[in-house]
Image (cartoon, rainbow, N blue to C red; front, side, top):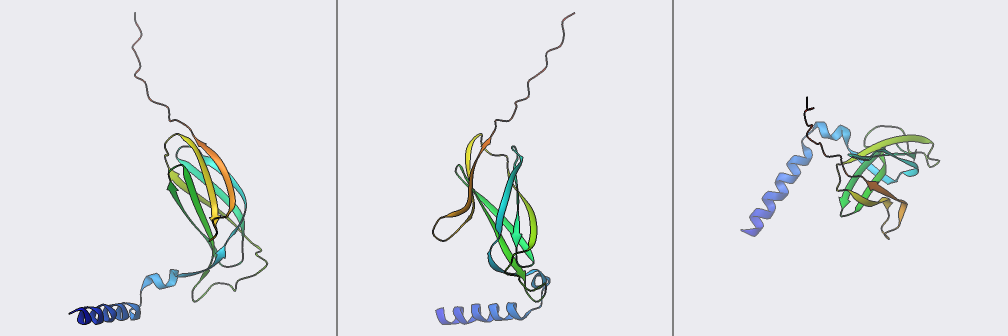
Amino acid sequence: MFKKMFYLTVLVALVAALLPGAAFADQIKVKEFAQVDKYALVSAQPMTLQFKGWIGCDKAVISGSVNGKNLYVNILDAKTVGGGKPCDDLRNRAFTKQISFGTLVPGNYTVYVNVDEYGKPQKKFKLVAPMLPTPTASTPAKP
């Protein structure tokens, strides 16, 4: 029973790999982390950050996550599979990317950018997510 299920799973995976799909054109191969030179706070609530730096391949791909009071940002130097320009080790292609973390709980946050396999970030900085103003009911003026 287990063997049949295994072979069926392998067969389905092979057939799926052979089918042409629109997603193939957007496949990327990650070379390494992008070089981040500058960062800026675009908006405190919702928390939106902007990063500028340099890549050697086709595009910078950004992703992020929130873990407690820590924000993690990865900006990858990526090559388009089956096309694009050859990668340049001089990293002379500039990029600007933004990422939004949505509305965060008020407080102090630490941002870690491009954390390597040893836990060392390329950039590390602190931000404050302010409290959002609460609407108050207006009272009518007395005559």
